[in-house]
Picture 1 (cartoon, rainbow, N blue to C red):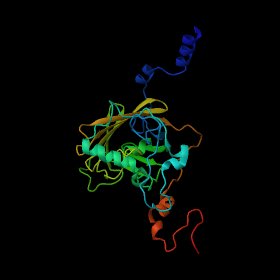
Picture 2: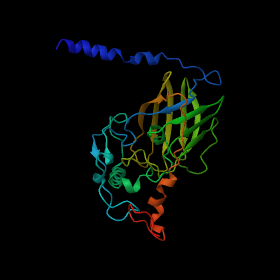
Picture 3: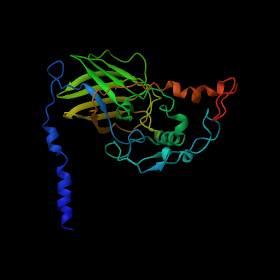
Picture 4: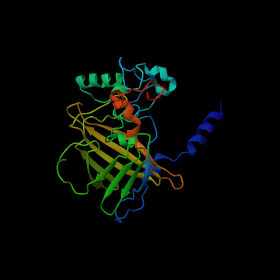
Length: 285
């Protein structure tokens, strides 16, 4: 048993101490003043399943009735593929502070996830969900401009350096305005379309959503990401998520096309075929 403390100390020594990251000074970017955030980044974890801390569970069942080419069967029929893996969550300070009526809607969203989640229909993921989906994204940083491209659904964000005022319309990815707080890039995001979700667990928002993102270099190959969420129509107070982002290190790594619209056409519009598909048999002649 005396070996256990020694073994534990050896394992801990393999990981960098948290104090080292506080002293990290990132290389300067194209403007020579602020950190260089250029690169392809990705999150690790289970946040896209559920941003709150959760145990493993089966995905909720479909509603009864036809759903395009999918059979009206419980997700349990998919076995482990349809399960939700456990996750520590990325929400700080406990559960999301829903208003009671909003929590009831979240629970219904979760129950009818396969019918309601915008990800299934290849709608753009919105902010902040685009950041922690299981796909890479690329930050392009110029002298005074930013552009973010996401592999999922070819989503993009053209970041304003000067505030143009209120967004003229709501969009899936919203309107983002950049500023700096020391070495932290701050993106103020408004004008977000209300139909995006935070995850597959039905966590949602209204058209009043306001997100403030913070990207801070913590080492040569990872960023600390934080997002403060404010939506007085759905939540009783602002709340925050936080997670690390990691640089993709593979040689010659690049974003690839994941234009998923073609994969959901049958799901969304198959019922209007002149000759509907027979499951597993293809179209009728």
